[in-house]
Length: 562
Ligand SMILES: Nc1ncnc2c1ncn2[C@@H]1O[C@H](COP(=O)(O)OP(=O)(O)OP(=O)(O)O)[C@@H](O)[C@H]1O
Ligand SMILES: Cc1ncc(CO)c(N)n1
Ligand SMILES: [Mg+2]
Image (cartoon, rainbow, N blue to C red; front, side, top):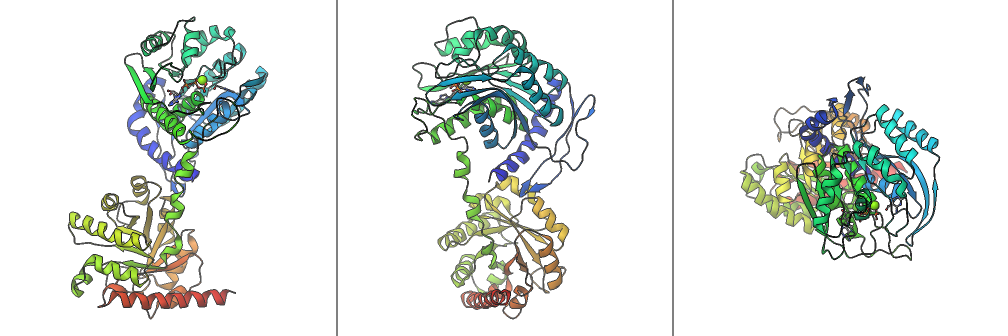
């Protein structure tokens, strides 16, 4: 799931990066970008993004797949609610790769900070060089920077290895009140760190410390503080109001140098707020790495923190007053996809045909009802000559029938109808919408099948994020005009070339179904039929008969394999 979420967000982010943000980054960083979209994959569309600095290509491998990358320079929290551990989880949750430079190791839990061990400066430098000299880091995010020397090293390294954005969370005091970077750090924060930052995200105490102890007790104080902090050089400022007394909402103030925004979210009643600041900053970095604009990144990140807190409000980790929350709640929420598509559903795949239904006087929904009652394990509505409104109505009524039998319903070609009816997915042909576009429109949970005749087409389907292949025509058929027949050999070739489950289609009926299933390749999961079920007077009887033949054929094949 993590991979799936990742690759989906990568492909979506590519679109927004390409359209919305390139000009912004180009202007702000004086870099020229060359965006190279290619599709590689594991289950979803991936996108490669090749960046060039003025000194020539940073990546020259044209087969490389570029993954958005955040480097966090921060301290370790042994309790894993904040610091490096929060950063890793936040980036993972947002589908972004995260490398780590550890500046300090803290002994910390839900009670407080019991000890701090600062990593020697030259070793912080060594970690930073290891990562930056080797990996294409998009965005650096800083957390705990416990010494002046470490800030200076960061400054130097970013001159040598420039990145697209720097997100600075000016960590000074933990919420438990323990000091993580003392007042001696303030001068170098003001003079070197803030001027480099694309955004700085202080909480109330940190904003106050940076501004020589000015009191910040109200939203109006936060607004003034954001403006004053902006004068210190960062391009954007976010003053976080998690600790604002007496506030019903969680209010943050964002200032981009021109406009002030008051960002509100509901204040979740929970003790589990340890690490909200680190998470927010990492999430902003992750969104920027994916190509988001700054305000969008901040809003998305605030929403993420609010959602994660709400999801985790009742969890109990540790005995102290401030517990961690669960960054990866989406893994639990979205686990539906595996459940949604089960390759064994391809066993007896019924594809409707309006011409045949008219011929026999069947309505679409009656035909579908008979097919599922007779044992069809998946249904596809293939309605070529129907008005869109009628198609949608038919899809909705067939969906009710299919849902009540636990049978998935797919729509042929029409992604709009699939979305509007909330059908389980689509089946697309070679001349329809490409699979990767269908995937980005439908999201990770819907089923996508693609018609393929060759191993190359099967590879493309896989790259585009398809769940299964419909392979044929195996035998001649009059359902489709000018359809090349590939025979059992062609079917076997495609099955052997692909990891995807395959359903065979084209001229299959009761008399030849067994021969198809007997080709003996493990990813051939079933047969798809049109005429054999729907060009018949009694769809129910025909489906039952075909189901029995298939059951017998697979039992025989299983016995032979033993
Ligand atoms: N109870 C809450 N409900 C909703 N949002 C919250 C809550 N507490 C904090 N936030 C939000 O979390 C983000 C981080 O703000 P906060 O002021 O807690 O940072 P912080 O003090 O640096 O956090 P930490 O030091 O624990 O990492 C802000 O967007 C803030 O509005
Ligand atoms: C290591 C570390 N970094 C940042 C914070 C701020 O929450 C913390 N408590 N611990
Ligand atoms: Mg903080």
